[in-house]
Length: 192
Image (cartoon, rainbow, N blue to C red):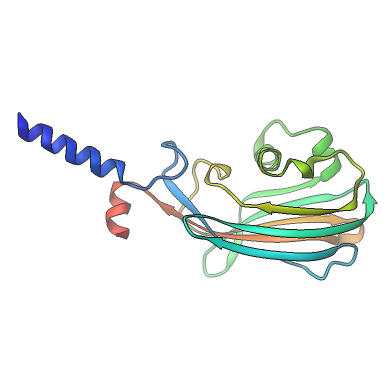
């Protein structure tokens, strides 16, 4: 009888030390390796700074400041997810939406809703009604585990985010590089 209790205590303590992502519903961990501002210099906005900030025992974050001098009634939001095979290839998530309409009438389902919910939770200052611009945006932001879909294959990913105006002019562009690793008893013992 005492042996069963000892085995149970050992198993429970081992299971408590297994790393998991945000909650028990996920079978992977997400780690952002870097943020990169892309397509710069911008023609119609001024990027003051864009810093990738790795943090010990906390997610990597981006700190950026951009001045958008003009007002815009029409901005296209482009979000694409890429999976790395030998090179990065398009994968699952692609959102190409008119930004002002996206803010006026929030999506109710699909990938657009996922993107809207992430912006609403982590950067609500970006969801102001149109026209937008004529101000400086200073943002410190990081992608959290709970922002990812519940089921996603292990591997390396690139998430690309762009704000585009008339004639395909990029106001702001960013790429987020991250890795997804499986978690659980077997993968924990293999990776340690």
